[in-house]
Amino acid sequence: MRIALIAHDGKKADMVHFLSGFKDRLLEADVSLFATGTTGSHIERAGFEVEKLMSGPYGGDAQIAAMAAEKKLDLVIFFRDPLDKHPHEPDVQMLMRICDVHNIPLATNLASAKLMFKQITTDLQDGK
Image (cartoon, rainbow, N blue to C red):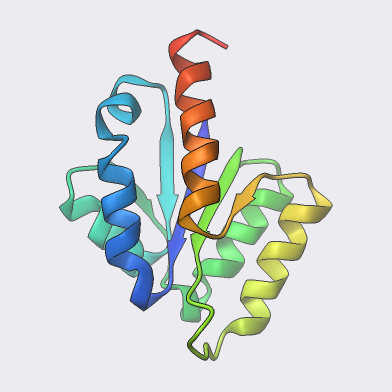
C-alpha cells in the first residue's frame, strides 16, 4: 500500500494527529508513506518513516500527481485548507483531477480520511 500525504500549513498538525491515531496499525502493515516536503518533516518528527518529496508550492503536489498518473500510489490524503488562498492552487486542482482520471482514492478532509484508513488498515490486517 502506497499512500501520499499532503497538508496545507493550517492542517499539518491535523495530519500528524490523524496519523498518530493509526500509528500502531501503520507500523505493522506493509505501507509506504510519501509526503510533500514540509508535511513530511512533520510526519517524520512524529516517528513515521516517510519519503519526502518537494514542498507543495515548489512542485511536490505535481510530483505526487505524477506518481498517481503512473499508478505508483494507492491512496492520496490531502488535508486542504479551504479558507485560505494558495498560490499553487492550479497544482492542487491538477492533483485532484489526476486522482479522478486514474481512479485513485482521494480524501481531502479528516472525516473521509478516517473512513478510508479504517477500511485500509482492516483489510491489511485481514491480509487482503
